[in-house]
Image 1 (cartoon, helix red, strand yellow):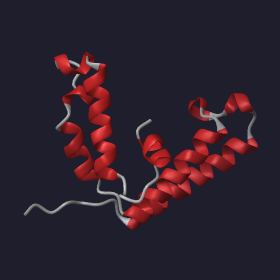
Image 2 (spheres, one colour):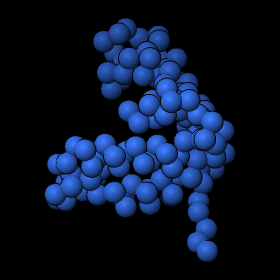
Image 3 (cartoon, one colour):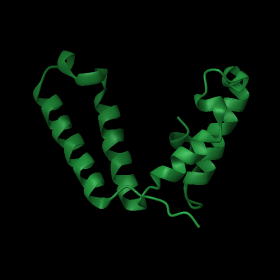
Length: 113
């Protein structure tokens, strides 16, 4: 059985702290100075996702493995990459794999964006 690495608590905590610090810095600057043209809602979503990952102890290696199994998502040279239906189905499969059984349909839809 292969062991799977997970995002460490320290790394997750550092990421959350950096996101919160970046959010604070953005709030201090003008709207035109917001890095990466992120809206305030996008920033809050990133922080929320970071916290969700921390709670779930997200298995990054498994996520990467599952993405690699679906060339329609990432392989520009694959004929499947141009197939929007297959690409959408691949993302939906990932949502099913990584969502909790008790997640609402709205949350699953948000994961699939």
